[in-house]
Length: 551
Image (cartoon, rainbow, N blue to C red):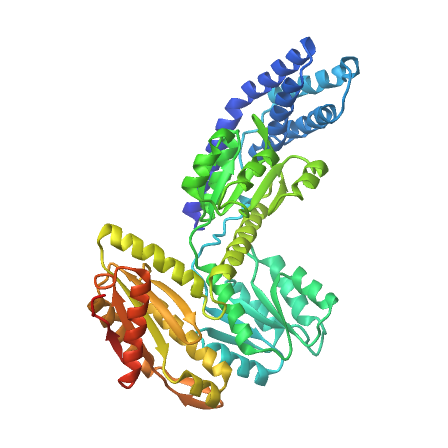
């Protein structure tokens, strides 16, 4: 962030801290009232309410500059927690001890001269949704091997910088921390030199460097050290370059994505605002829920990538609420992170029966909070992507594109808007594989997929229909307009040079198009596009044909 943004963010956080401080007398008074009510008439519900209020004070006070108050509240919380976990008689209640702790809370706040504030220096302000880097650092002491690998990577549109000295890499990464690093582990002077160099870099940078490690060794020791250094992938030599490119595509694609949608559930408004400020500053979209009874409506409206939830809520616990969430269609695997003020082993054990849960101790360090959320959301998105996307191109797979076609055709017919469907097939693809190798064939497929993504609109839906065949759904577009756009892409693609077996070559594609004006149903639309594609091949290939015959 620039200095002005820093100042504005700091002012926003300090304003939240001031609001929190103004509400502290009421919070402490509520704790005292609940305690006196318990002394008059022992009641488990009142004990639960008292524990929740103290829990909030213990977890949230430190966030806003009241560390001593938070510490004493934590002691009281542990006493109350023990009472909740045990069946006790009223004469066994440690009344004097609880009285002392309540009095201590009142004294500390009354004598507090600390100005409420939040230290921006401790906050992680990096944005996980920042523009992606297309830069790859190849680090290998053997410059000839590095050059050969760099050549393969450049075929796919990446910018590559090569380093044969670790100190050169360490200097360069300081200036380009968004670069993806392809790091050889073994160096002549140190058999784990690559890992040690990356660990040193990770300690100096605010954001984690994305690293793919390469090694001749395939054992747990090396893999563990690679993970500890922040490695996101590990390749054992010799490896298929295409698989490496797939990993690079996955990493860089993960950098360009919709903002993370985070739903926060907490009954404390000040803490809701605090966490919202942190996550919004990191580029995330945030929705707050202070009343757990309102959760279902917000879930369906907001469709969050992740739920950040206090473990202790009014009317229910976070664990109970999670069980409700897991019974809702579409939220069975949505990641949930609980915020707790203690390492609650019982709660952790219970959560093992749920899915995708995690715990962070309150107050969670902002950098850890953001990095944990980022990791969990990216993991969830990648798992979903594996289900609906083709691994080579990253496009929708055959099943997913067919499902999209059904939805879009229904929509177009309902709204009476145009829609065109194009089937694209790379010409003589089998001959490319036979002459230039399957790796070259994969590069051709990826080249066309990139060209389609670049030249088509964001509203167009693209999928890999199978093998060398692609499908494109063009909303609000008639057949003639669709053909014009696809033909321009065909012309460009026919001029692209590819490399295989040390030879340069070019290729082309054929395309068949049909639209809902002439073919209103999905089966008829699909069949019409297939027939048009067949005609394009029959007429010599490298053509775009429209099927305008009425059904």
